Image (tube, rainbow, N blue to C red; front, side):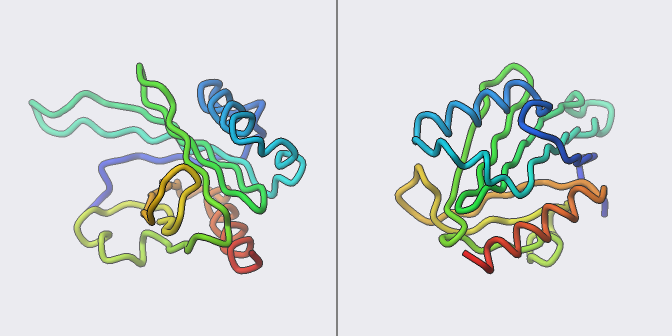
Length: 154
């Protein structure tokens, strides 16, 4: 079974990320007074995800973008779909666990590629799991490795 999404991941700076994502991340950093973290960036990247149209009456093709910034002690990620405002999540690396989605039970039901982030998020009161989709490119693998190392070191 194949994923419903075609994903492409690239490494980029915040300045070259999708503008809606970059703006949302910068606003989050300012609002939560995380100021200096950009100077500690270990990885910055973006995944473009295109949902494929299926069948005669299937949904239209839909594209979303997820930007992620690994800047210890924080992981910040934002997602935007066409015509919607960007949503931002952030978590302290010491408060999360990372699992390759391909090794989760869910992959049997919903084939895909990326990482599950489980733990406390900055703006939530509880524990949750979030998914960051990643494409097959080297940038996606580099992000996985650096994220795992940063969580282990936190």
